[in-house]
Amino acid sequence: MDSFHYRLDVGGYKSSEVRWTWTTGNGFTLRSWMAADVGSGVTASLRAVSDTSAPVLDGNPTVNRTVPKLTYDEDMDMSTVPAASAFTVKVTPSGSTEEPRTLASNGVAVSSKAVTLTLFSAVTASDTVTVSYAVPTSNPIQDLAGYDAAALTTRSVDNNNAANSPPVFSNVTLTRGIAENTAATTNVGAVIPATDTDGDTLTYTMEGTDVAPFDFNATTRQITTKNGITYDHEAKSSFSVTIKADDGNGSTDTVIVTICVADLAEPSAAPAGGPRGLPRHGPGLRRQHRLPRR
Image 1: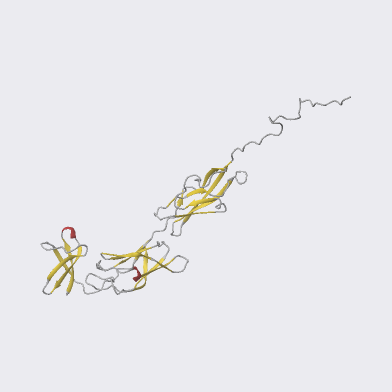
Image 2: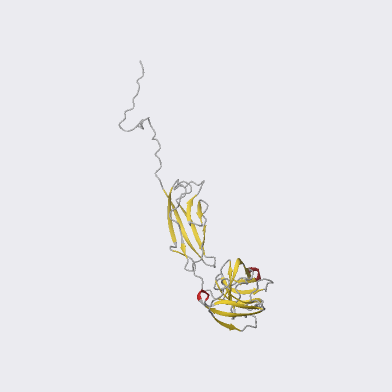
């Protein structure tokens, strides 16, 4: 069987990759890589493309955040996609040691001339990145004529990440308040969000010396009062905690939150004296003396 690839320019298959397969005695089938058989009675303009060699990388691979990309000098066969295990991506953060970076289980895609990978965690602008590719026995990277792309060994990757923008809280310090004797699980003021212009998913934590008397929900970014804690203004009138936002790309921001405990009027104690609180002695009161009997 001889195999060639062509350009199809017709209807919904405009510029799709097709393969013209000739089998002796059985005629031919025109098939789109993106659909089933095109079928008979189709008028199309086909242009044969000579292909007698394997695909070659067109420059270095690139990476933008979680997406390394390998671009070849010709269109790839999108029906054969290597498993993620065929690739090894290694990242060396600035001033640190090299570490492997895990690919998502379905983190390989083939489209036109590109093979794209998806990493579980993003690469930062200062990272050095390499990629290796071991040609698998099944579903290798190959062109439309069936030629396999060569293996890659620690191939340098061009890092196209812009400098990371850190998360930002709108204030450096914040104040929240509760009344003394506040019940457990009560919200301590409003939530405390940060923003990130890169669109990174932020992770929040609460830190500081006064974290023990409070709970913090990292998903809702809400501080709450805690079970088993009595908030007494006379014992401690304020607490200080720090909320930190981490973008997962080496940048963080913090805001210091002061939690004030408001004083409440205490119930008055019963005054000393008689049942109505009248003094037993005092100015204007005459002490009675009992005269001795004769």
